[in-house]
Image (cartoon, rainbow, N blue to C red; front, side):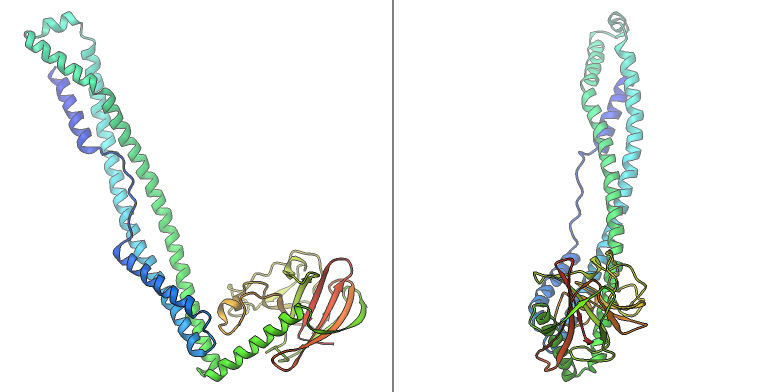
Length: 398
């Protein structure tokens, strides 16, 4: 009888001392992380305020300095969070080891309890009475047995709760490990961004020689080119119809060297729907041999995507030198004096020829537009006969 009581006390004492009601363990950000977040938010608001004030070299540099500082703070915050995550993972690992040991011990004690209860529960009533040392002893034995039986459901719940907590903590541990891996990747990305931002600033200072007038010249040239291109796309150019052209027929030649609204040889190629909406040329052009020079350097991994998926022939001969893509390009994000955030065509050149060809059959038009730069930007347009698209070729000679 005493052994039954001892087993009961072992279970009751062990379970209530080792098992807690499972509770989630969300971690609050550290005080340092909160301070970093507040500083980042403050600088981000400042960045938004100065975004439209980049009309001077001084303001542009201040804007870039703010970007750099924000990235540095984000790196600090990510690094701090990584250290917090490591501590959290270490604590969770320790808790899991403790819970695992608790489960083993609880299971062992509980099995002893079940065996003892089983044996006692099968003692005939008359034999129990006969083996008791009087009425008081019989009552005590019966009371102990009833207490043990009364706690069966409760103890089973506690064991199950411990098992559930154990499984929850293992799941939480895996989630923390995944979050840690993601934070490490984020930190690597932020470090790359910081390096790029510093290079952009160095490039700006180098190309302008830290001179405000040089910056203003670059800004004015970019604004003039944008104004002319937008006007041509909007149909404001002066055009003359030439006649029908077949696919692959010469329509113009790319100007070699600087020209009106262009600092160097390239064809700005645009695909436009008849309603005036520009389209991604890669949705129409087919595959071709190319060199990607649209990023920080030719062949770098940060260039714009080159992913033609259509069946049109190219307006230039291979090999294509690709200097800017369509949409939100590398240049948009890294050349600070560009006045646009969306490139409406692709900039290309040929390493073998300066001849430009019709990509589809249609009607050829020659045009020009004189804008704020005071020069006439020449272009040609082919109105496709088999669809509601036309193509524009800018920075060319007829």
